Structure formats: C-alpha cells, structure tokens
Image (cartoon, rainbow, N blue to C red; front, side):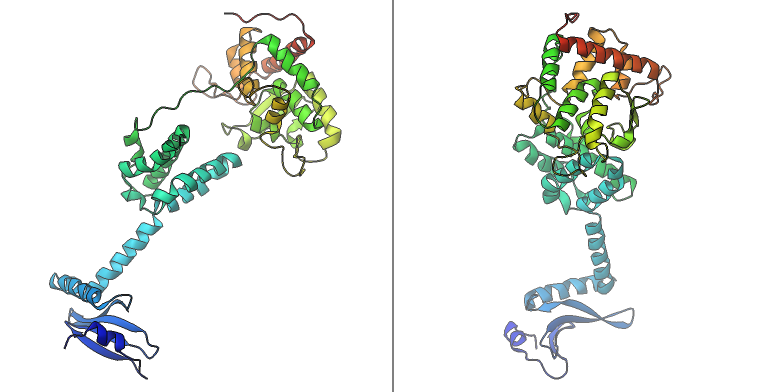
Length: 403
C-alpha cells in the first residue's frame, strides 16, 4: 500500500533501521537517530542497487515520487540512474569550479605579480564590486553576450562609462585566459563593440605656458608645508616621471655620483626598467633631502610611517593649497609640460623626449630602444631643461611657443 505524507511524518525511530514501502521500488528508511531517507531499490545489469532520493521532510513525498519516476525512465532507456546522478553531480562541481569568478581570480593571481600593486588592486575591486555579484557564479562557458552586457550596463547606469569600458576589457582578458586553459570556447566581449557609449576624451591638466610655468616653480620654492613634500614638488618638473614613480622612489635606485635614477621594471607602466639622468639641480635637491630620509627606504616617505611612500594626494593637495586648481595643473601635468616646451621652445628631437617619458619608442627596424639608448643626448636634454626652468623661475624673458 502506498505511503501517505501523514504516515511518513508519524513514523517513529526504533532500535534498528526499518523501511516503509511506497511502491515502484521506493521506500522510506527510518533510522534509530530519527533521520528519514528516501531510497529507490532497482536492478541494473542483473545487480541490485540503491539510489538516494533525498531526506524527509526536506524532500516531501510527492517530490520523492517524481525523482523515482525520473530514475525509472532512465532505466527504461538502459541508463543506470545511480551513475547518471554521479555524472550530474560531477558536472555541477566542474561548472562551479569553472565559474567566472574562480577563473577571474586565477587569471589575476597569475598575471598580477607583473603589475603594480595599485593596478592589481583596482582591477580586483572592479571585479568584486561590479562583476562578481552578477556573473561571478555562472559557468564561464555559459555566459552570453547579453548577460555580459547587462553586467557592464549596471556600471554605465551610475555614470561610470570609462569604468564600464575597463570592466569589459578585463572580462575579455578573463575569457581569453579561459579559452587558453580549455574552459571556454569563445570570448563574447567583442560582440559588444559599440554597445557602450564612447568615453569622452579628457586631457590631464597641465601648465605649458612658459610664463605660468615660472610662477608655478616659484610657488614650489616658497612652499611652507612639509619639507619632504616641498622636495617632491621641486623635483617633479625636473624629472617629469609619472606620479606613482616619483612618490615610490627609493634611495637604492639613486646614484648621486653618476647622477642617475634607475627605476626598476616592476614600478614602470610599460614594465621595462627606466633610466632618468639627473640634472645638477635635481642632484642638489636630493642631497638636501638625503640627511632627512636617506637612512630609510623611500625618498618621500609617508609622515605616518617611514615604511610607506607618501600618499597619492600629497603633491596634488599641496598644489591645491597653493591655489593651483585641478583644472589648471595635475600630477601628470609635469610630463605634458616637459613634452610641449622641450619640443616647441627648446627644439629637442621628439624621439629623445618620448624615450625620456618612457613611452614605447622604436628604432627604424621596429625594435624597442633599451634603457640607455641616446643616454648622452638625454643627459644633455635634462640639463638643458633644468637650466631653462631656472630661467623661467627667475622671471627671465621667455621664448613664446611656436604656432
């Protein structure tokens, strides 16, 4: 006689396990502990087998019967329902192991050691905040272009169009890594070309008018804030490296006798070591700074801890306090200042300038120049630049920019 839900619910434990039959090979096994398990007894290839159908009452009687009927349909097709269940569970585990989040974290762990710490952190935060909540748990092979678009459009909806484009780019990198490692067959991100609005081009603020440059330099000399910050402000226009490269500068990289600053590859945007010839003015600033911070790691340590470099905003905040608005001058602005004036006023060869900016400069055969290429010419250029800045700071007559 088939079971009822009432009889299943009222079944009491005994000293030994016992069974309550329902029909079609299914029964409820009641354990001495009080636990109740749905089982299906069946024969396959002449052997008697058991299939677990669930735990009562989490799996009620009607659901257990549905699972029994599905198992019997498999038997009718010559399929062992027990092996079928194992295969389905293995496939589910495999899909979970190959989710977008799992593969994205694996990709990040593999490639982030060659990135700067800040760059790696930004990508991780972008993935965790904007992508994992929506597509992180999905098997990467099953993510379609519309699903990916829905995720990045959430970013666009809050007005972060550039972040949406960067997130889509990161997704493409993760998908291509999944393809290379055999866990996906295609990358849907190229299908979304044109699906996001374009990023409005913005230029980092920079002072490039020689007369205004002189006023900026005089303000730096007159800065009455922290001495370390004042030195960083005065050095920034002389070396025109990226802000992160400047604030993380280490004394071990500085050779005052040779007047050189050797920046290791891991701190450079292009992941190539970079050599900065130091003008006499730059060396003088470093010699002035050395008694204060030379016994530590960083040229410009944080006021809170000598084990950390100054913050991203130290130079920016100092410039704002001196009255230079963000629309007027940025931390990257020293690079645009040097590029513009060295080319248009001092007439320096553009390839010398681009090489000193650590941009990808190639020779006529398409090969990248090494870190010491045109070193003599760049030494001369850096000293010429420092001397010219001194003239601007002194208020000397300047040559106007060529049209």
